[in-house]
View 1 (cartoon, rainbow, N blue to C red):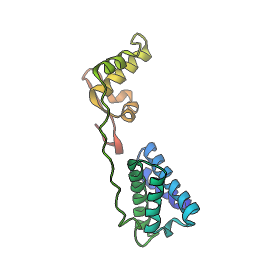
View 2: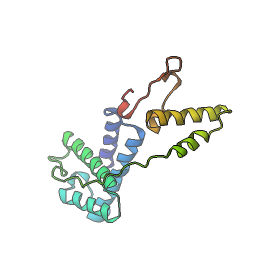
View 3: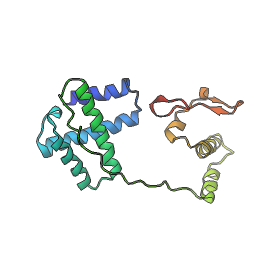
View 4: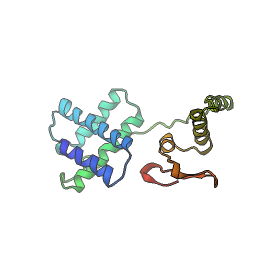
Length: 176
């Protein structure tokens, strides 16, 4: 069983180029499912899981009080894994083929007030090198809307201060 999980995670890393955080999420979701299969459904083999096991697992997640976004993410991880198993010839058909995504509540992000933004930008001590760096990072986040993960992966060669541009890499290695 763990051999298939290892092969899948390797596939995601090498062939799909997913980030370490995404790989960790997939692995965590799949290990949670494996635990459910072993302990609750008494299934010892991932390739023997059925649509009934899948819907029972999703129901189990809801019973645990998981948010609909978490349940959807788990379902996406399982879908991807079972598509991989089917492509590899380990299963004849995907047990998630007819499982429907649960509705996901849409929430608007909380927006900072103008005074909160001003306080945030004023927080670092710009007289120190670390403070100047931190302020520049906060201003870049505020001005561009890039993700924190994109910001922290920026390297010196990615910046051209005289031309006033920055190159960053987003999800899936996309260059912005």
